[in-house]
Image 1 (tube, rainbow, N blue to C red):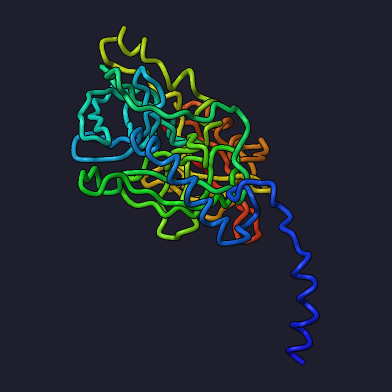
Image 2 (cartoon, rainbow, N blue to C red):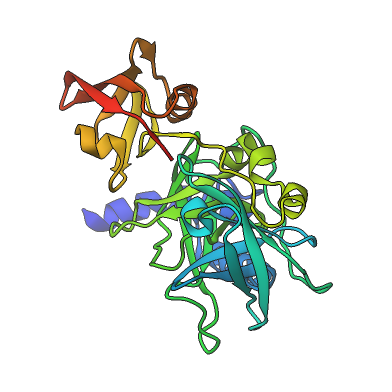
Length: 327
């Protein structure tokens, strides 16, 4: 019986052709052969040298994070919680070990986007391109490359590379299965052409729950984040953060509102009782339809304003009063 089944299948296998034979292996829904896996490996190896060279370590006091250089003028994309307060002095360490001086520019605490300016960039500064799209997000299932310096720069080890796929891409946040570690925060997420599509933001112990700031989130605040000329004119005071009012939650889009992925420590949301997995549906009587709309609505309120947050928790609506604060 088994032999008969095998014989019957042979003609079908003989005439079977891959549906995506004309696509690069990394653009297919899944690898179809060993040749596809080797093609994926080869593509990663081709783009990596440039990606690794532009990935830097950022040191501020006793803390360390990662970043990526995206312009010859010395602009570094990183996470807002890495760059910190605008005007803060930052040491930038290149992959080849050179140490440069820099200052934090703007940061957005809600999306966790941040920029750093190298104050005297060398002529041979390695850079990479970044996605300047205001709306376009990577496709779910798209292959990606996460690069960073977990634990700080290690000259013997070099930067650490992980290859994975996009699990979700919604508004401000990209979620991947690229495992991240402490010190990776602020590092770049690349597509297979070596273009930055995200910046590492939240690190999870779960391998499928690593969060990255999307490039549209950077573009939404680009003018406020990037102001190196104003930084120089104000004698290093830096540009103030575009975020004035703080709720203190990380969220992603949900068909019923904004799903809370994390409640920040010592935040207004935590103090009021907002919990992970709550779905925020309203602020006062304003309907929340996405993570971005939540951020936009919070910004409209002044600090120290009391608002009513309507959440869906375990299928039941709950109204929570929150005292918004200054970020």
